[in-house]
Image (cartoon, rainbow, N blue to C red; front, side, top):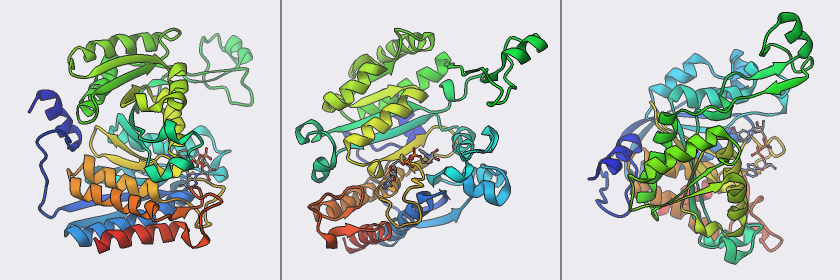
Length: 404
Ligand code: NAD
């Protein structure tokens, strides 16, 4: 086994498609923490649990499932978006599955008491520096995309987003007020409130090791796929991107078997809708990855179809890409397939359970091939009897897993 792939195995036990296909066939006893969070987060996690139970029964594994609070739900119950007990419980687990956080109820909260602090905090606490967001088009859903079928059919790309650095975490940050600064004779007064501010600032910082480790991972993942990496930055304007580009080029030299290219983020945003099939692995910073992965989400027809994995650090975290969708929360209308496919990613990347991961994917694919659609995927031609609520979609996927 070459050193790069060995590193990847130690990081996430990724399945290698091309060689050394090993299957971990003994029954596993795994400790999983589920963080339902807010809005539809809680609804889709219930459906993911049905899938975990179906896999348990079919393959003989035992999942010790425990729930913990995060986001708005934790704020309401414990006064903090990320209780220490949640962090502790997650660290002691083999993997974590999160629903979604946030909602209008907490939008007016001060920054430290926003649900989003819980999400950023748990990724940081678990050391998850790499966010993997696949965008694969299920052929039967090509019509659900706003793009033409021939543009999206066959798209299978992976966005690798740096998750613990960049502008979301950089210091200094804050609001500034000229009046306060002059009276305090301070250069950066980050203590002004939003209401009193006449300017605001954030800082994008990346170190060489931070860039190296994420670009390395992208190359190692590309070796398990179609051997192409595109590094995305804004090196024509930003110094942090110039460093990113220099370091990425250095890492690329270690992977002569992988095709390497760079794109500016604005061009990448265009290329994703113009010719998405050109991409295999895209590696980029926290901010650019956040935006590009939502754009890639729409290639697939609905954000409700996109799973993600956050790797590196003490415990891997899996979550659907979507948010808490306050507009449909509590109505049993959410698409739970992104959360269910996140369970599939967990089997693939964390537990090397390729058969279980494939079983989850094909149960979802079969459901869609039979014409079933949740409301976000439905069109005028979807028959009423094929329209699924959130809970019915979870039941149907679990039933297909049990019957095979
Ligand atoms: P969102 O993803 O919650 O919703 C965007 C749109 O997509 C909405 O119309 C929603 O109904 C729809 N949608 C999302 N998921 C869906 C699903 N599974 N099935 C069907 N339709 C779905 O994004 P937003 O509206 O920008 O944010 C709402 C809240 O979620 C905010 O508080 C935001 O901070 C939070 N948020 C959380 C996460 C996360 O937990 N990872 C990510 C993004 C946004």
